[in-house]
Length: 353
Image (cartoon, rainbow, N blue to C red; front, side, top):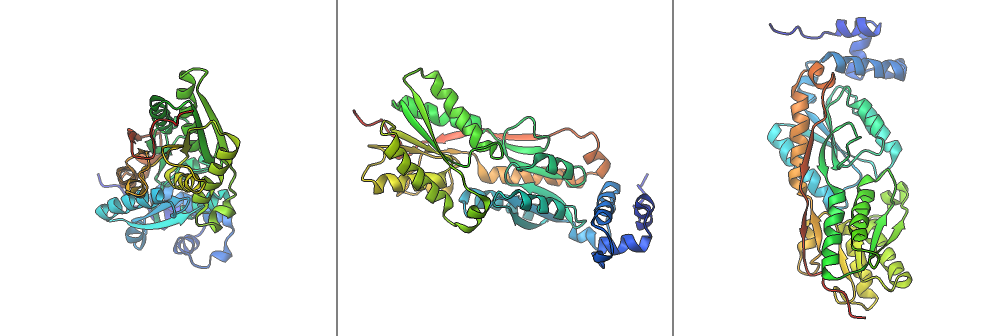
């Protein structure tokens, strides 16, 4: 039996407004006449009931992509993978950047409630999972990022703990016993950074008391992230200088990602040292410049393009279902790509004492 289409009258009766008022709100006309709470309620109810206007039948094929920034090739590559799949699926896309600003993330979540948005893909683990879980009750949402059991969202997972284990194992097998982890802001809002650190620490602990992991971090406010184009390279450079000055026993530096690792490599070379003769350097993400002959950075491959495409396929599956099937009692879907260590010329046996 064919399901009856939801009408403006259905929404009006549920929210206690006139059909004309509901029509104006959904069309985005004269919104100043209505309280924000009323507008939010109309948007929410229209989603819950599965209402699709004639105009929105075309416009709702818009997929909202949310990412911290596009300066890091990791995110640029991930987004390109998403764009590739969106093209195949016949989706239009819109990109929003947050620069790790929680207020911006809140505004993005509010915007995502617009009837014209059909689905949302986060290119990172949201900083405010509870807010995004609330959003996912009315809009299909998928996140790409760290493997976490408690997130409560559909995800394409990167096992960052295992990535840290792979790097530590590689350096220990080469003979390194004094290793440093160089990281941007390290806190619960950036779980991937924490999990990589935990993986490194656990593997190095298994090597015995003669092995040591030293931590160097730098807090980066969101406004600095926005206004400093080369913030990750700069951070790697500054932290490597600190490491060289404060921990002369270190023979290997592990950067939170490849962009930070490039700053580390420049600081090492500018300090008159060689790679890997004096210091081995590792990164994470295996972004495409890391394979260039002049870089040759040992890094962990996360299969970025494939992950981006999988995220869009997953959100499309949710968009194609009836609202009651998507949002009521749905389980959580996780897709995980296995990490792979790519060894290049930036790592070698430690220098002789």
